[in-house]
Amino acid sequence: MENYLDLNREHWNQRTAAHLTSAFYDVAGWLTGQESLREIELGMLPRDLTGKSLLHLQCHFGQDTLSLARRGASVTGVDLSDRAIGAARQLSERSGLPGRFINCDLYSLPEHLDETFDIVFTTYGTIGWLPDLDRWAAVVARYLKPGGQFVFVEFHPLAWLWNADRTGIKYGYFDRQAIVEESQGSYTDGSEEVKGTEVSWDHPISDVINALLGAGLTLRRMDEYDYSPYDCFDNLVEVGEDRYQFEQMPGLIPLTYSLNMVKGLRD
Picture (cartoon, rainbow, N blue to C red):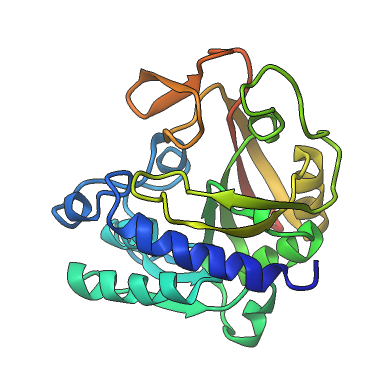
């Protein structure tokens, strides 16, 4: 899929327009001080990030990036979508929260940014858009200072493998081929007009961890969770505040996982 970047950029440009006005992201509420970050990633970070430099990979329109700025971090966000980065810059101005935002695909980031950070951060629905985890892990390692922290939260591969009504497995856990789909809509309200071709990949957790270990990171902790912090899949039921499980299999499978890693140091 040589043109996967163009296809996905166009799709996320469409999503950005819909997401900015959605109740899902609630930009108006966020501007008044509501939190966009979730329990999992907050538990991995210091509460006060004052003095910390932070790089947010695949930041969408920067809401979480700027939430991290609210906690004191000096933030840089990166995203493939030019419309998302434009919206992130506008959101920074509207909120009065400083943030630097770079528009490029993740693999080409070293052509646009030459520094290192205390924390590299990426969460929820990111690596599925990337075909090569070794290249991704190399970018993560490139931007971490020695001893710097990598905060990673992602939807569990088991969340993606099912058919539409969740009665059987559609995709193989170890199938690493590109998934090319014509899609309609997005995961937020108000996204009915979003449509187009999207290209994604499923990545076994072992591939993720091994890529990061191979890039020189050390795993401090891995956790799996039986819920999604977002109501972003079909057939989810709410089981607690910001906790959702599949109606057909509540509490039976993991829906998210996290990796807390550090560059080059071992306990």
